[in-house]
Amino acid sequence: MQDDPGRKGNGMIWVAVGCGGLLLLTLCVATGFGAYFVMDRGSSSPMSSPMPQAQQPTGPGSGPMMPSQGGGTPGATSSVEVTAAVTVVTGSRPVSEGAICSFRVERLPRSNGAGYWCRTQAVCGGKLLFGGPTAGYFNCRMTVGGGAPEITGGDPDTSSADNDASFAIDTTESSVVLRDDATSQNGEYTLVAHINSLR
Image (cartoon, rainbow, N blue to C red):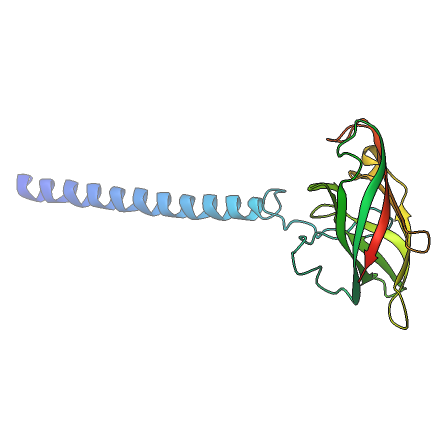
């Protein structure tokens, strides 16, 4: 009995179709495993891990990541507007004598619920000398109501320690003192201002 060439050709077609299907199935499975492996490893990658939350303030001059807003810092329990005139400037002199300092001191509750501290953005002669989007915090005593407001306190650290100037305020003495070191954008200086008004 002789082989039928037509049947032989049909068989070869079915073998080719079967091999092609098997190859396609293998590629699909391999692609699925590869995608799973990449996704599984990617979830433990540092690039895909959630960013850690900013630490809450723990000392003078540091603060939570909250922007400074014209209407004040969210969560402030009270605030006092301070106006002072610069009387003495030494060092790099970022502003001149006679320049006006104008800023709001806000009282903010500490994140641990134990007391409060103050925050300000001290601008003198149109220059921000103390504070910033994540700075401007200092230990303070602030009394508002029942007479003239009283604020005493400050941040003793300069820019090399906490990225903003040293700041001190004492409304009972009508004084504001700002000081910074050579690492700051304004250079090393000391500024004394006399408080003219509190409201």
